[in-house]
Length: 257
Image (cartoon, rainbow, N blue to C red; front, side, top):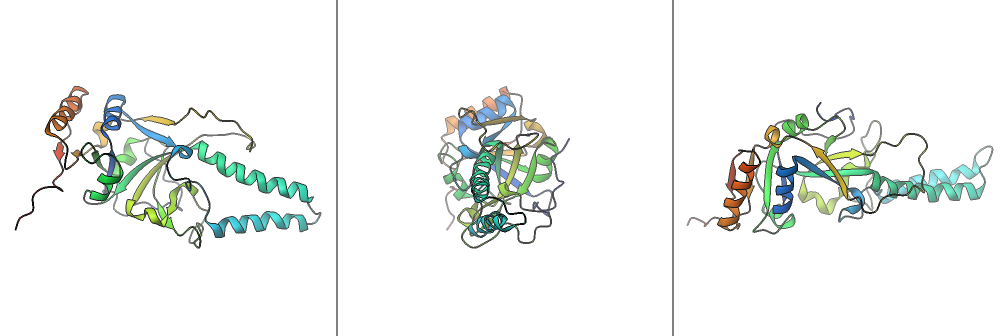
């Protein structure tokens, strides 16, 4: 089954055939074609500590709401309100450990900035697909959507949302150059949420098994990749049973005067 598109509050490309790119280093590419899987990183293992956090205005509203419970009828004891506030932060932190991300770059063309950020420039690889092909290739347990970029000091996640904010589809505006299409998966937790739940700190992410041949349109290798590595990638790709086009990036080609 294709990805879950039920939420109307998660933005998706208007052009379902829009190109998407996943930039990675050589070991991650080999992992992808050997295991036939997309790796979803656990959110708390990512480099950006703001993943899954709230913009300042949204957090202040939540604190204000919980604090006013002490004035309700009948009033809630102050120590209970204080615990609710503490548990709310713990639950938000736990959400980082219960959710997993796989990230793509939405663009018509390859990006020099992305080459530099997501791998050694002379050894990086970009897998190119489309939104629709990726949507059809993952399971219903995956949600795809465009990341929205906010000023976390001033903006709110809830502006223009009908049902609520999907917290893992937001990032700080400093990352807007990524123009990210994000795939998410979450840990299903029945019953009451335990703010003191324990987690395995050795868990770094989940594999989601796919057929690369079903959605990879082509593979582009770094502009400065040595020829022997380029040939090795072609050989290993074919040995794993895949024959999608593998091309060298032209971004570092000689200018014409």
